[in-house]
Length: 377
Ligand SMILES: *Cc1c(COP(=O)(O)O)cnc(C)c1O
Image (cartoon, rainbow, N blue to C red; front, side, top):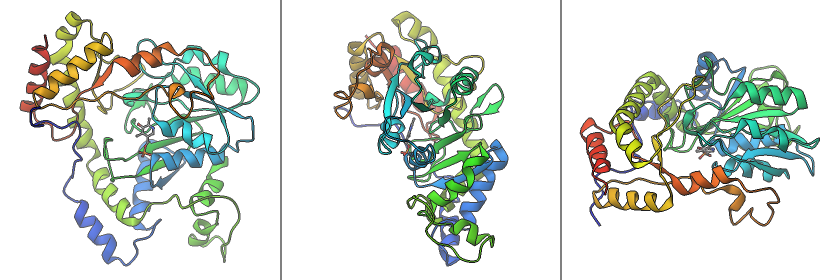
């Protein structure tokens, strides 16, 4: 096998991370909810209009907080796409929910909004749409169902920072939403995440769950004169060291987004004709959604063509990777799954391929990847 010349991902350092981490350490306060945490949270609230933003140690943690806030009772159901990362379902399973898996759209790996209604029952407590590749789901359709049948909408916006639906920031539409700053996302802090709350009724309890079931956040603001154990919760807040890293990234968010969008466009233009000839599909961005340059994927004809492409790229020193395996067919869930076939989810499991994507990917590297693909067969 050839030496890897172009990895799939490379975490980007803006240059200020170590300065801010040093500042955090020298301030003498490195536990959570300090100056950097509050700066980051305020930034998200102001830029995206979230009523409340809380940093978490991962998007998985933020989803777990949502599951607690949803107040799942035995037998309650939560609708989740099958084509997603484990955490979207796992967070709710841990609270005892029954997961109702939904299929993907034919033209996009995101949830098929037109097939949701038949999955709704009187037990439906929430739906968790995933904005795959940072491309918005049709939120009007989903919010209308939530209003009609009275359940919560929790946006899994892990990949969707700085992306928009009809001009509204992703994450500002559902009752709550979650973001990831894992090293593979657009802005990063190693591990890290965010819970955004748009429905005010959840804010107070979210702060308590975030702080190990105590009302310490209120105490810090001087609203009460002692704090104690008042509810369930966990240690969901990250240390100031993580928040300091994230702050350096946020200061460069516009630049990062501009660069990533440019890479995405270069891929698209470079591969358009080739893909058409080979029966390969490029990403489809509906007119109501923006593209936040999170990833560039192609959808192959079948798994065989995908395997050959992965090999071809690898033999030229380029790493490409497939993505999710349908969760309803996972080892953990397949025996519990009672629903029907989810053929689009399985189709993306078998044929979707992600190409290298990171801030420091140069035009020369991009051209090399594109050239290598064009010489396939
Ligand atoms: C990355 C990702 C997660 C998990 O994020 P972590 O921060 O690693 O917990 C959840 N859902 C989706 C759709 C993701 O892409």
